[in-house]
Image 1: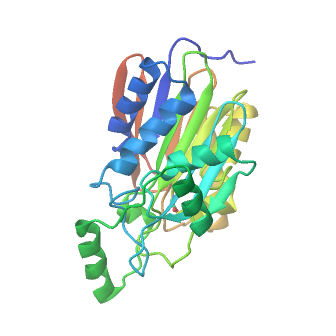
Image 2 (image 1 turned 30 degrees about the vertical axis):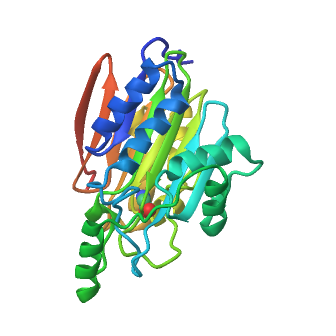
Length: 292
Ligand code: GLY
């Protein structure tokens, strides 16, 4: 039985925009916040960054020019909250946390999610920046199919606080120029994110449809429960995808995993994938090569 890592907080997040998100999460912990506070704070940072075109404000819109956002959170007690297809709200991750803490539900979508957010004091704003609008107008001329990999994708933030407790958050604007109404893996507990305080946590980035079909993040955590290391668990979850696509998937999925003893890992299907790990006072970007 592995011991819980204590007094040594760890933050693990996806992509290079995970680095500044980790810094914000570290500050939240040093200000006395717990793992959930830190994961939310890190995710909010990416949601605010208008240069990031796959998360929150400045995210690329759907095919009709609407920015629609997905997010979820999960805490160390197994509580979770989620919003999907929410529009005009800058911080869906915080709305997801409100769903978790202030409703009897887990998931709110679309108009219901937006109205709930407004009732909780969230301001409505136009999420389509001039830059994203220009990109969308350019795309409209050819309507070429994009994948999440081309537009970078989800930020997922996994945190272990000084008590050894785990929590996570993920948030995205999803697949650029998707069909109106499309929802990916990021707001789906067990697909985009899963946390089990007794075992570990995992989160996904990449083509949400394929993550959903394999219940990816839940699978990674269950594999760690069976004794797989975080790296092995991420790779084995991706093996299921590779098998389902006859050994030749033409899209990207990346997983990050944080085991309760503080061991972190990651894997991706193709090309390469960056993740940011903050541990022992060092916040650094790491790169993993694709399995194929
Ligand atoms: N992984 C993000 C999405 O597919 O929406």
